[in-house]
Length: 318
Image 1: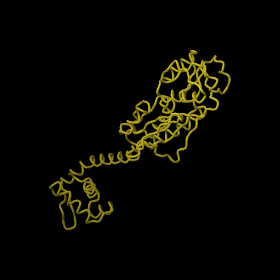
Image 2 (image 1 turned 30 degrees about the horizontal axis):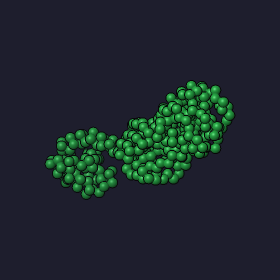
Image 3 (image 1 turned 90 degrees about the vertical axis):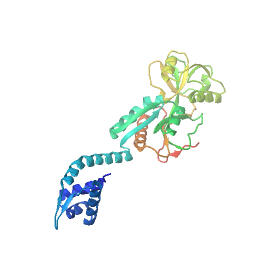
Image 4 (image 1 turned 120 degrees about the horizontal axis):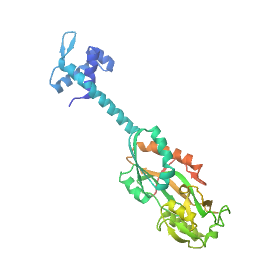
């Protein structure tokens, strides 16, 4: 196999006209240049120079090798540049996972900025709930995933993942526009004990959080309608079929639905990015930076949201 270093030296010799001149251009000793040319001659099994007492003359084989080497060395240079870009996270592929409300509100801001600063990184998106995304990150099928957890529904990520907090959303009470509490400002949970609720499916973190909040107020919420589609939940509330509790990202203001705060409720849904602690794709660094900036922009539009600190991310507890 031909050594690219030897081909570069051969090219330098032909361009410079002598071993000594090539050595000066390359920063080598004359002996090192001679040794590399000799090694290349052994590899091609042909003499590359006719050596005189004070001169060298390249053979046709040398000229042919240099002519063909220009293209090969240029391709190798391009490959080395790509490898450097991959190691720096500016070239390559980012496999990203996200859940629907983050995909709708957070990702458009983040990925638009990321595409501008990392145009040579191909971004692939897969969508799912945290329980679906976490195994894909651990298996290396995703490089980075956006996940969430509720304060009242404890969960921890596996130890081999690093959690980077992004945003803490307030939980908003959705009321039909004509509801008697629609203009009351902050509403106490105790005032909602006789309401019909619209919630996410049983076993989801949102449904568990609602049940635990109501339990603190001394009652079990009557949930007659369930959907994991927040658009459906808004539609049911708008139609007067019930009230709902949703995270701030899930609420898009519209006619017929009033969003208000729950008095005395400090619980939040917390959004984070997770990736493997070891063998992380270098492109993850830039993506996390874009997500942090997007969270900073979004926090001004979300009632009661809190952007978390990023200075010292810690490994998630198992």
